[in-house]
Image 1 (cartoon, rainbow, N blue to C red):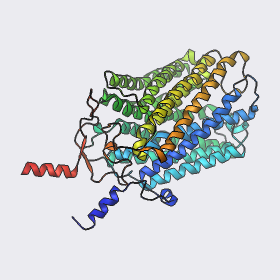
Image 2 (image 1 turned 180 degrees about the vertical axis):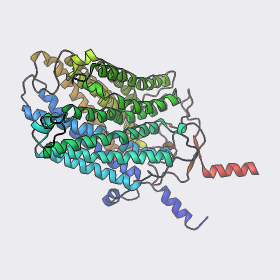
Image 3 (image 1 turned 120 degrees about the vertical axis):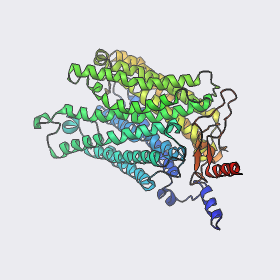
Image 4 (image 1 turned 60 degrees about the vertical axis):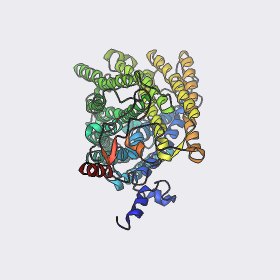
Length: 561
């Protein structure tokens, strides 16, 4: 052993949080774990900004009269809420935070394939967000998060061009992250880490990255065309100039329906890990869960037309899109059935992450089933642009993606920070969020079915009771979201030190210290078993799914002797 070996070993074992506390070291880091934490802070801040706008919206809808903000202010509020939540939180949420932190560790790598590109993606996101928020502060945007033409190109007030450019910029951040995940999975897997030995979370990140790479350029070009028409008067979507307004919808939804899976696929990967760990069982149908992630990614590109059933497209085209929309529900249903089968006769532990996972299954199932309603032509004609669609969307995006995000944060928080949060407060927050969410959005299904249109700042008096219920639920939901912010920050200073494997997980991330060393592994792990190993009754871990190169050498020497 060389004289420098002990020094190198100490450097590799040094905790990435304790390596340096200077701000400069964080802002210039290429450590995927630190970048993931910086994303976590940024994304969470944006979530609460978007949530503040939603709070004002619900206060406005507490009474039928518009008595909190004016009509223009209301338009700007729901645009602000949608833009921040969709483009700046839901799309990047899990891939940039948990994905950044965990994917290299889960595949046995020291870092992402392109560490500098990884850091650049964070700066690009911040630049795009600052650009867009400046547009909101300077004069606002009133188009809604979809920027439909001709309203966005001809009639809307405010800084539409600046907002579109901000979203255009953030798209590059998503692409950089997706490239890193794809190359890391292909090139940096540890010896023995075959495709079907990868954790299901990695499968979901990989499938999501494929969608990002293929779909995001379409959105970028669409927004660029919108800017060109609005700024220079070139006819692309304006029929008076030889354009076609429906072309924007086709281009926009060709990206934005796959974007739904960019938001939900990572959350499904989180839920697969949580259900498996807290049921103390290997996942039922591992290959089918992994394959369904790829199937969702592929099918997601074929169903954009179900957003345009009332836009005048061909009835035959609508029938095809309706059929494909039913088909794309099958892979998601496979996941739900397999999660349920995994829990069947499992030794279930009702810890905070598991409560989020079970809440996810309930809310996502409701969202998915109501998706079949709006994929049915006559039903969609009736409920299109009503609060039924708002409820359906939020059951998928908030009830699904946000529950997965929170479940993942709670599951891997001890690993990320080396600290344990108070379990009682975690359980209370999970229950409050589940109850508050249903009270907020389930009445909106009834409102929409009865005919209340979305995006209206005033409404008929007969809708008030259900709106009061929805606003009351939003109050409970807000408390539920604020609680984790409080006790997770508290845990950083006063929480107990976490064990290396507090949940009894069997993945690679649980076989290193909490928080992980700067370079993740002292020696390159060698994967020798399938990814999930749990005793079905006692709840113990059967054994590590990995060994190290030193272990392999020692075993060979023992055999030779």
